[in-house]
Every structure is written in C-alpha cells, then in structure tokens.
Length: 304
Length: 142
Image 1: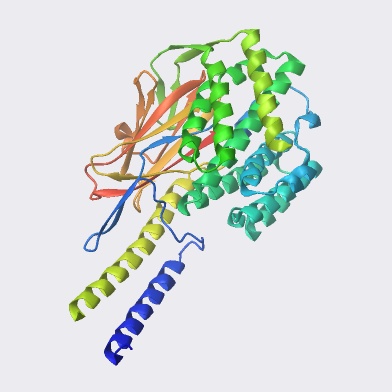
Image 2: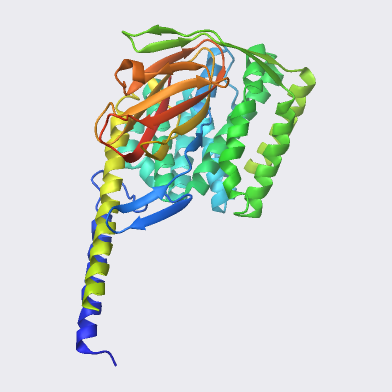
C-alpha cells in the first residue's frame, strides 16, 4: 500500500513527464519530428543536455531526375516500355517492397516529367502518394504540395522542382525519425530504376553517351552499398539486396576510370567554379552487357 | 528522497526542452539551405546531416556528372557563414573552399567531366559554436 506522500510524488513526476511529451510534440515548422536520429552512441549529461554522436561520413547517390535530364538531352525518344506499370503497386505488400518501388516510381515520374507526359504522370503521382501514405511519410506529399503539383502539371521545370523537393523532405523525415532503413530503400529503388532505364536505352539506341553514363555508376553503386550495409542483418530481404548489389559491383570494378587533375577556374562574381579535371572511362562491350543483364535481373525481382 | 525526485524532474525537463530546442534549430538550419536550392536548381532528393564538435570534420562522398552545374549549400546554427565546406577530388586535390569567400553559404560548380568528389564540412573556429548540426544540400541545374 503506497503512502500518500509517495502517491503524490508519483503523480507529480507523471505530470512532468506528460508535460515533456507535450513540449516535444510542438514543432515550429509543423513537421512531426519527435525523435533525434541515434546512430552510434549517446551520452547524457543532465547539466549540458544530450550529446549524440553521428557517423560523420555520408554518401550521396545521383538523383534519378538527373538521369532523366541526361536522357532527354541525348535526343532520345520517349519510351513508355521502360516504365514499371503503375497498376503493379498493389503487388507491393510489405514496407521493403513499398519503399523500393517508391524509389522506382519516383524515377519513372522524373522520366515522364522531362518528356512532358502529363496524363501518365498523374497516374504515377497517384501511386507515389498512396505508397507514401502507406509508409507513413505523407508529410512529404502534404495537401499544399499536392495542390502545387496539380497547379503545375503543365510546367515541367516547376514540377521537377516540387517533386525532387518532396523526396528530399521524405529523406529528411525518415532520417529524423530513425527510419533510415526505409529511406535507403527509396534511394536504392530510384538508383536501380534509373540505371535500368539507361541499360535499356543503351541496347536500343547504341548511344555512346548513355553507355558512358552506365559506366559512371561505378562509384555511386559503391556509395549505395555503403548506405545499405548497416541494415544487412535487418532482414533476409535486405541481405539479398545487398548481396546482389555487391555481386554487381564486382563487374563494375572491371571498368577503368582514368582521372587527370586540372586546376579549376573561378568566377567569383557569379559564385561559380568550373571543374576542369577530366575522367576517361574505359569499358568493354562485354562488361556493359554483363552489367546490363544483372541490372535487369535485379530490377525484375524488385518490381515483379 | 526529496533531493533525488527534484533532480530527476529537473533532468527530465532539461532533456525534453533540449530535444525540442535541437529539432527547432535543425529546422532553422535546414531553412537556411533550402532557400538557396531554388529554380533553376533541383534538389538531388537527399538531405545530408551530421553533428560536429569544433574539432571534427564531416565527409560527404558524391559523384558529379560532366556537363552539369551543381549548387552545394551548407549551414550550421541559425545564421549563415558559420560553416566551412571544401570540395576535394579523390586524389585530395582541393578544388574549392568557401573559407576563401567569407564562408559563403552556397557555391555553384560546373563539371566538364564526371568526377567523384569528397566534400568536407567543419565548423568555423571563429564562430561561438562548440558543436552543432551541419546540414548540406545539393541541387543540380535543369
């Protein structure tokens, strides 16, 4: 039987805890960020607050939208057969599949957008919205963003800006809420789909610039593996994905990239530096074919 | 018992207030960066965040495509100019540092060839911050 004094203390501490939860529920930007990402170690000092140590080496993956622009600028025609059909989204039943294909559909939407295929784009955007909701990142595609997208359907530049920014917000939200295991899958899906599109275009167009872009995925793939690796033991699906990407990386390792440094030139007034250093890619047709076949197989497993 | 309860309450409140303050600060820092990734620049869809002490450096590894112009923006704290970022190639040749340009919050880079780069970010030693979240964003020109 608790004494009245102890009961009062428990009530007071409970009230303080509830107040703390309420304080953390408030956020000036309206985002639902209620946790700080914890990666390696934490050290709590009641006098100085919380100090959390992060891994300070970060890896970036080129945006699928960049690839879409590069394809458009190569004067290739739009090819609808490259896309993952939007009505397949019902097949994706767990978060692993949904997150990967959110990345895939994002890459598809970028491709549709640069080729101004607006009616198809609407369908893909609808699927992206649904997958975002199912993954709990609907904040990235909030009502305001949806309205902006609908109002800019005929303006490909604005649309690309809004969609890319939404994916950035989703990335931010997932990292801030300790859900980077989902964020890395979205990145992986986007990279795989855009690289798949390049391999298909390479076969159909015999465009050397496209071939070079494929070879240039050597180090982005290394970065992608580094980003995914911390989640290897998360599930069998993560392990299988990382294993096939590592196998693919062995084929990319055979590609030579010869780098020559040249001093950059600076335009201070326009805050612009021109990087004059050069890279020369050396890749055989056989290497290209092996890489293309493996990417197709990986992509098939993700979207089917 | 009374002293322990008081200390526990103070610690819980300090933790809660500090967490909320940190989230708000990161939002401000992010806003400093996002206002520079504007048309014709498009976000690469990622946000790069690190927590640094005054003597630490964060590294961001990225590939930049030839023929494309990029904008790199980085900030820490609540005002511009507290973050130093530098761009190196894989051979560690220094390609750019904003330290030479009053710690400019952003800079544009035009790549004539596809290059793998390392971006290093560190707190400006002359600023008052002993530690802080660093936010970096990358955009490419449409």
